[in-house]
Image (cartoon, rainbow, N blue to C red; front, side, top):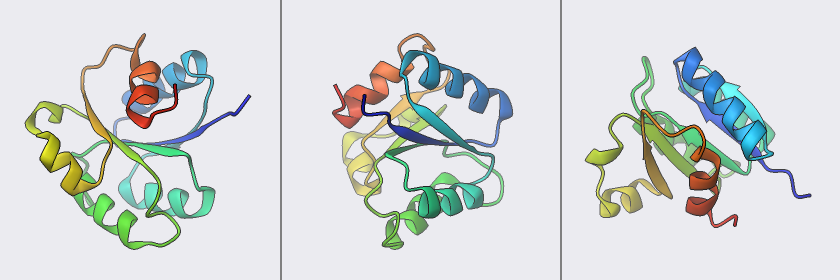
Amino acid sequence: MNEKLILVVDDEITVREVVQICLEDLGGWRVLLAPSAQDGLNLAATEQPDAIVLDISMPGMDGFAFLDRLKKNPQSQSIPVVLLTAKALWFTQHQLEQLKVVGAISKPFNSLTLSQTIATMLGWE
C-alpha cells in the first residue's frame, strides 16, 4: 500500500487530534502534527510530506505567510496544500489558485468524510 504522509498545521490541539484520528483511521495515512506555522515549515522541509492540511488563522505567522514561505523554499514548494479553515467559504476558486492550494474545507468539517474529501482534492482516488 502506498502510505501517504500528511502534515497538519493548526494551532488548536483538539482540531489537530481530531484530524489526525480521521486521517489515520479512515484514510490509512501517517500524520505529522505542527502546532504553529513555523513548526509546519520546518517539518515540511525536513519530512517532505505528501500533502499539508493548513489552518489560515493562527497566532504569530498566519496561513498566508506560511504559504508564501512554503512556496519560496525549493525543498517544500511542490507539496500540495489543502486549507482547513472556518473561512473556507470566503475563498473563490480564483483565489485558491492564486494561493496555489488545491482546495479549502470548512470548519466544522464532517469527520467521517474528511479523508475522502482530501483524497479527492489531491487526486488520490
